[in-house]
Length: 87
Image (cartoon, rainbow, N blue to C red):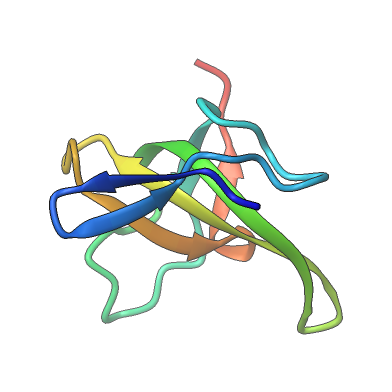
């Protein structure tokens, strides 16, 4: 079962799904859509993950993360919208 932590009114998953990038991994946004608040290149840190599930012909994970410009606000996105960064 996934480990959960409450952030105000939001819940964040802190567990790592099998095959996913682990908690603490630094990521950048990719494949932004016009309605997205965060554009390509926005940086964040993974809190946890769920999955994998098949999506558009490949294995995909759901990532709970915190964007650098929104500390303390966990959000969710799929792995096809992120890339790992080395800092």
